[in-house]
Image 1 (tube, rainbow, N blue to C red):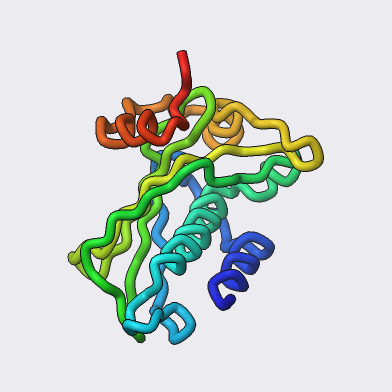
Image 2: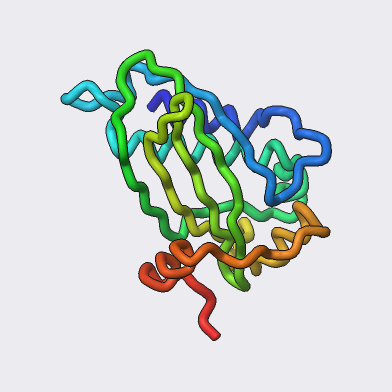
Length: 176
């Protein structure tokens, strides 16, 4: 519940935009492990990682100054698919960062990488395929339209091979 409230705050009252922040620039969210984040084994529950990733993606949109632009058009983000690979545990009180960055997009989906780290130690890596929908109708918004709104000058980079394979495996990749 605590992370849901943090997500509500990050979305309803976003942090200030970073001047000059581009769609391909990384966004960093710093957090600390709280008691409600823990499972019975006293490390962060795997479901809580997903909630933390939600908060970090909202901060990423805020860093771009994207919330007013998206609200004006009635567009909102949804997760089409995601996967997380865990390397280390996070335990009570530990500070860590989540680095969120867009690694590419196709006609349907924006692909993000979200890396959890504690100093130089990688904790986990998440891959996210995100879509945008229109309020009311639920109509899908083509990813290039969203990117053009948030950063009209950045062309899509070549999708990293591992992300492209994952997108095909989970069936979210653009179908030619």
